[in-house]
Amino acid sequence: MPLIIVLSLLAIVAIGTVCFLDHPSFGRLPRGQRLERIQKSPNYRDGQFRNQEPTQQLTSDKGLLANLINFLFSKPPRLRPDEPLPITHPQWGETDRSEDCIAWFGHSSYLLQTAGQRILVDPVFYDAAPVSFVNRPFRHANAFRPSDLPDSIDVLLITHDHWDHLDYRTVKELRERVQHVVVPLGIGEYFEYWGYPAHKITELDWDDSTALGPQLTIHCLPTRHFSGRGLHPNKTLWASYMVQTDTACIYIGGDGGYDGRFRRIGQRFPHIDLAILENGQYDKDWAYIHTMPEQLGQVVRDLNPRRFITVHHSKYALAKHPWDEPLHTEQDVARQTGMPLVILQLGQIEKL
Image (cartoon, rainbow, N blue to C red):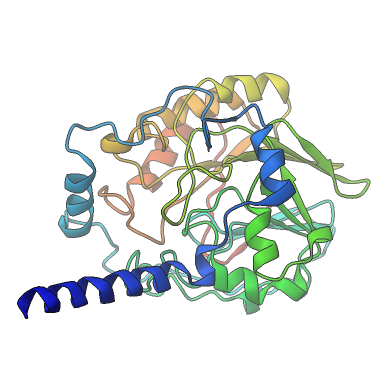
């Protein structure tokens, strides 16, 4: 009898796991012609996408299980702010469509307006994990909803498929308001699965470009990271972007550790008006896949933009550094490099 009970419990757990992983929010792996295109990519080898430089995801000797336990149960001081962060709900009706501006919604979600084009990047307005009690946002930092966005979004731009950058519920709610979707290779499968028409989706490999009208070109560029939201890692690509319009050249860094790509991108695009850079959720235990604080200054020097902004902070505690350490880091980098820093307040529309 005990063996039967154990086997029954195991069967229940197995069935529950299969049902859980079958939820639409996990997306769908690329197939058919999309998979054939992926398999021809120079960045796809041995069944996975690869970084340009060899990259260990974990750089400590603790092992995956020890790292997971530390992440879930270690509670260093000052992971979260003691008081709610100030927020503003943007009033897009008061903004001239011709003005270049940005509104940041915390972490890596922001709306960029340039040359009359509204570009929404990595919007996560609900859950940054498969279950809501994981990756809880800071108090009041999850106050934004799709209703805080304009009625029409020209481009929805996704850097990679991690839960804190691609939120199923958010993109489902935005479907009728989005004119076009630009994603790295493979992520188009998610959007078709979630009801977006194929003709609205453009998938790019590193060094591909797409012109969306006469005033907007988006270049897909490398970064040093990884992908996956289920049991199959690196089946979709991760990316950074350069957005070029008649009025600006804007770098969108996405997630990724430091390597030589920043210098190469700076050489290829010698007149970057604004760089939006990852700064937060780093740790010495995964030092190759996120930018460490001591590397941010070199990133700015390599790109040499006229101004820079940092994101990937001020909403979640996905690493063990103090919540406001990235805010001090960006100030230090601005002083050290002499590069002007644009400081954003949550939800406030800032002119560029």
